[in-house]
Length: 295
Image (cartoon, rainbow, N blue to C red; front, side, top):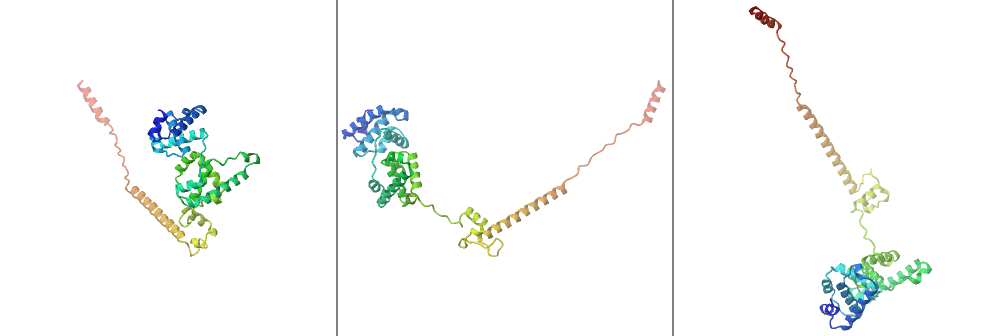
């Protein structure tokens, strides 16, 4: 499909400069690497080059129409876009103020900038002197991650996938940078986990019961396991144990009773002994004598 036809379908036919820029990017892509190896077809490559050109010129681009025209899913299209974007070496500039206006988080602009400065200082101090000059913080992924973490800390909702799409990176890289920032600047970007009440968590309660000396009185503490002032939890556990023992004894008793009844009802099978009839020898001899007399 010709680039001008794709631009017409995406509503960019009036901008001839954007079409020429997209053609240059496609030729550069063909020279530098084979896009088919990474699973990007010719039509999708033309659409992505047109989107990159429109973004660099500040033109509106309909991403949903581009996804439908490419014949790919949105996730596959974003992955292909990031691969081509990074392969061409096109640098995207992200401004903290523009991101804050776009996502409605204007009040965190100063926090994001301060957090980025602290992260750069601590990251460079952790590197050896020979590698500090090669550290590159101009990539937009650092700005995007700092913005996302600050918004999360201030309990503001930010679309993570849209932010990843804007900075032209992958989810794995975004996650790795996020982990690095939280490790080095946990006081700035870290989010404190919600503390759960030990009275509502069974595992914590069991641990406190195992160590009475670590238990606080405001948590329903007790002086000793055998004292009269037991906690409600301890009383409930004792009641459950008592009910279990009562149930167990009743089950065992019924089992023994059933065994006794079965033994009592069991019938003993009698054995029948039939005595063998012994033939009378006198009668046999008389019959033989009679037969002899006739003969």
